[in-house]
Image (cartoon, rainbow, N blue to C red; front, top):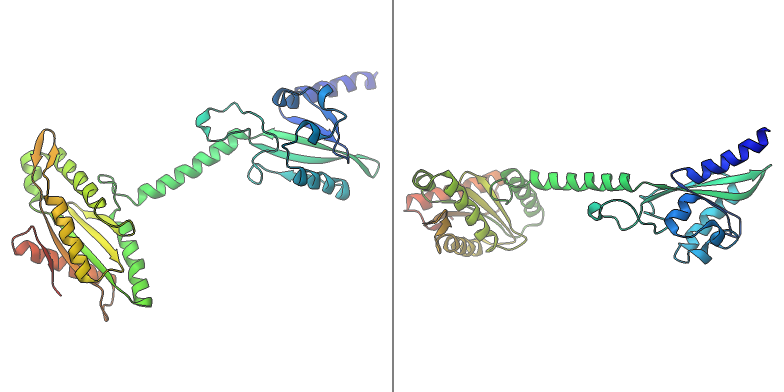
Length: 313
């Protein structure tokens, strides 16, 4: 009585479980094919059982799958493959939104020896749908990347913040100390920016900062580092650039900023900038000294009447 009731029950469980089950012999012929595999592949057990798995699914990774199954026959132990190693074995559709970023169901596979006595007579393969897990992990990884990016950016202007800028300057200064070459820094700020805020309001002032930053981004090289130092003060790191060339860039930036008034809330706001430049030279002890020299040049430009580029060397 026990044998008569248990067999149909085990068949029912195999048919209704929420993961794929199929069994292969050593010649890679299919011996069993459950409902999950039928529903997701579109092929019934009658169509698949008794034939090579590669006959029904020629797109399967033949060498990899054969080697995996053969290792179970030889060793008599379980084998596994996670979606992180191989995203999927079968190209099954998934039920995640298209925005999930995956084309097919992501699958974990388990290869289990089916033994009779001490002999492995078949290999049972299970397919688990882990699409949700993979999508969640990808979303977490993307979120971490975005957080790292945001941590390096100024919230108002979208350019590098001071912490990131100083980190890049420190790295470039270390490289310059080791290998020599040229390295320059420009510091600049917007002239009479407090008057802009007082006259037009802080919302307009913020727009001026954003527009100015984007203008400068379009005027510098991609390998230069442009950052906001705080308030209306900005910095530009120019690797492999002598001071004379850096001051040409300074004039280009100054003209870019002052060439066209900024349009904000229906008003045209005239903007000018003062720029100070400095360059690394033998004997310079730290990158902070380089920043201080550029800052001194900036204040010299202000004392001389603003809207100009100045270097002290």
